[in-house]
Length: 328
Image (cartoon, rainbow, N blue to C red; front, side):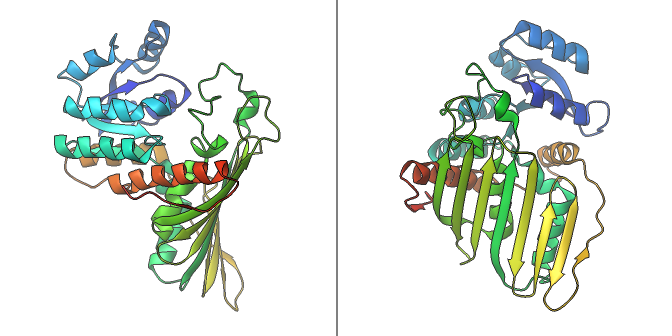
């Protein structure tokens, strides 16, 4: 049983803990840390964990095998490096970091320390995303021509200026770091690395100084293209559509639905079994820590997703001028 400490206690730390606590035979949350004593106490009571009064105390505790980081994005890289230096396995929420060089530094720190690094791109574990991958690898779609993705949600409409996400430093490109990063990862997983992007970002509905609408076009190293749309002031939508020479596939990722439209034939829906993506990713992390599996999001892919995010932000800041994605 992997003994993990939850670091940075908020809504998402609770979601991750609820997915495994008392349900998994592979991983449990054994302790927690937040700068807020009240948050520590509330989390410890809710999930029956211990609590530490500093991150250093967590890292010094020999009864803690791993950390689960749900801290603000700008702190991820430093926290990963500190955990790796202490010999702790690391599960860190997306985005892995906010700059490609800091992401590479953190990934290399884990490699040097020989600890497992897992970045929580949980949509890769969904039934619909896995089915899209099976269609591609099985040749059902023929040659992949284009990927079309959208992840939108209205959460930012409720943010005030004091919310930590309501900052261009923490949320460059508006919804990219909380929403679009999921789709960046799916594009990389399904289509390969991104070489170039051209993007636009604007604010149309929010009352805070944050972009709410971001669109990006990608060229992939395979020669295919991809599109990403993310709106943090629009109704909840998570879609990923693939276009190939033999068939197109349309997926509602969170709904677990995939519809295939083959060339010259009637469209049909694929039968899929539901997947708890949070339980699946955390148990695969535990398996990887035990040496029984490889976490499916590789460190290089995690670093590349940050480089793509950075290129989108740069292109949008330059009125859509194409940007090469940094190689790290």
